[in-house]
Amino acid sequence: MIRKQSHDGSLATVRAICFRIHHGCIILRTMFYNAVRLHIAKSSWPASECLSEKLSQAKIQNIKKQK
Image (cartoon, rainbow, N blue to C red; front, side, top):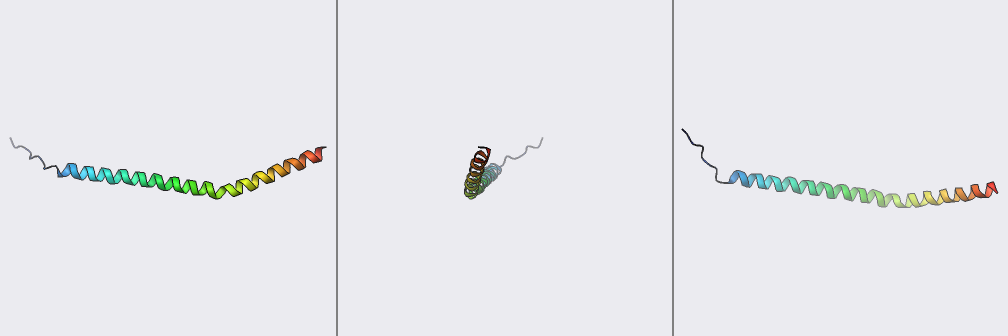
């Protein structure tokens, strides 16, 4: 019977390094997507404020026309 020689742990080291790289990529991707979402949200705030002001002015004008 031929016994398989056990490795010296290098395979486990490679797996650990690959796991850390993969995990780091996931974290970086999540941080990037969160930064993009935050940037989009911040850039759309002035537009939403302007839109809400126009809507409130239109409501006031409709109320005045109804009276």
